[in-house]
Image (cartoon, rainbow, N blue to C red; front, side, top):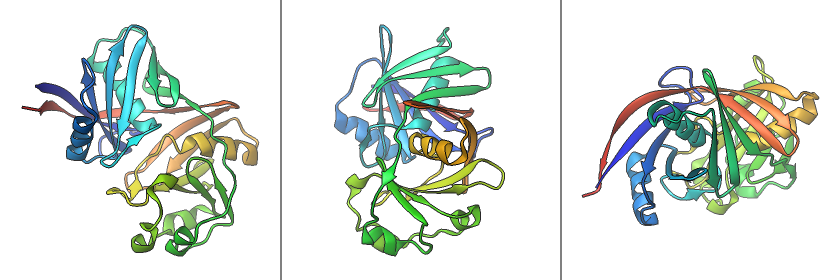
Length: 262
């Protein structure tokens, strides 16, 4: 069996920026173990698989370790592939996912994701996470992920992780978002995942489901720009819609190829 595969840099204005995702269109679903092995072989933060349905696409996301309930950058990459390479004529794409129906809008050079809002709430920080950080936050919250607020961008840039300590955290806690106001954007962030083959995610669309409602209230703004301060970096255009958030960005094709399963 041969499958098409596209590697896309999402939330990127040119290749080698943003977050790489592999996108694999399917005619029908393969066994989960095969999907996991493909994701492991690709060894990018996320591999997206989708199957065409009458009113849209059934979309699933896999890291090299687990299936995810939501992934923004691989959704953007999937929409980019569907529009650019699969001759999709409309400018709105519907995805059926573990996080419900997601709408994606194609707007000239940008792709806009309509995602659920996940406002973080006050929380306590497990000792394993606290001891793994070289700089401590001024505020601790949690939604799907732990959400750590810092005073300024320079602290976000200087954060390092003691992986021996960090990887004692239960994989089921999600990830750890660190964030502050930005110097050249409304806010900045970084995202770390414990016990993952890829410690720091380059650009995390799903993290903005929590970042947007938080910073919208703090800054008293509905429309914001964000930068994720990984080595690759990525710029996101954000809108708070109360129960939903809109996250926009660009994408670029890195490679197109084949997967051979036999």
